[in-house]
Length: 258
Image (cartoon, rainbow, N blue to C red):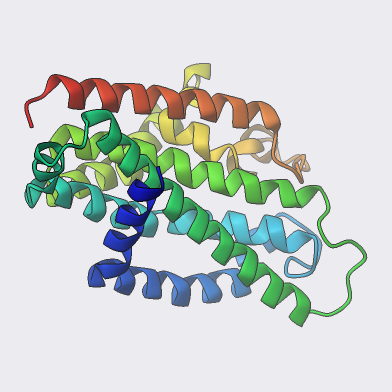
């Protein structure tokens, strides 16, 4: 396990494209959280003070999930395009160990981005000065953000193992993320409960989501019911989906020739 962790960490650190993407993410995220106009629309509170900053940052940075997804696609698909996956197997690594190594890379990415979010919250939160409560129920969204990243990255990894090509995997993910699921949720499946169990929708439920959580009350011009904490049932459902994606990925890889 330690050896696999060191290998994946080295791959992530040595890839210049990943470092550039991470740098762009850091720049955009500061601006996005600082503005946080999307949250102020629904909450009559100071969104950058503790403990509201935890809700604000996780909500706003949820829109930037494409950045860690691109990093994961580059990291995973390059294993197939550069034939390093085959070389690892030839050198004695089992297929299960290879899958575990890619899960470790997802864990590293999710942890790094979550720690960055916490750091950003601390900087912006303390800069606002006065606060009555530091953590609050809103801090649960930080755990939700970690699961949100980990879940979406397992979905991305499934696409990569299925297609094996960086450009194609990125294109399919962006198409599904930006077009297919939004159309299914807001149009084709709008009147059906099954829309709540779409893959990315499951993970979106881990974060503050005013439009989706209150679409009915907003349509009726009623005051929305704001939830200031992550709902733990959504975390359990997300874990089930994560396990499902991992099992499917493992099945695909084990049945294919290297």
